[in-house]
Image 1 (cartoon, rainbow, N blue to C red):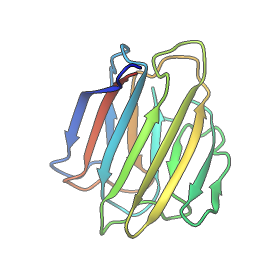
Image 2 (cartoon, one colour):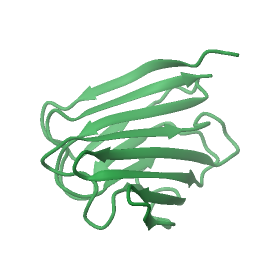
Image 3 (cartoon, helix red, strand yellow):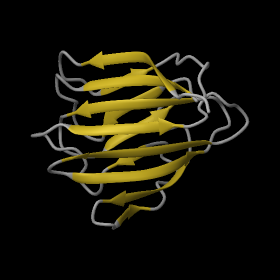
Image 4 (cartoon, helix red, strand yellow):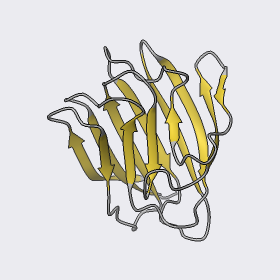
Length: 162
């Protein structure tokens, strides 16, 4: 059985607050990529989009730690949202996020995204989405629905070989 390896592709630690963090020109030589972040900032939902902001339809389910469904379809606004109502991340603790972008480099089919996010105070949000594009994913954009990520927030991107 082959051994799975994780290759670091990018690492960003914010030295000042910023509204968006973008991984662009993502190499296409891996089967999957994983984005890992530890963020703090204005309270609210985190938006994740691929290739360009607001460009693709997402369908998915977001579950909360208490078993409640936060949403079953985010429509065509082009974002995967982590959080519910005005909850998601908090401004007083770091929220940890892991997003698996499966088969991101395969053209001709839609892309599944699986994620988990949470902190000891905000609970856990988990879900899966289908990105309705048959193009490869060449960029990933993180942003808060309102406000900025605080200095000290970190974002990492890994390529996965299975």
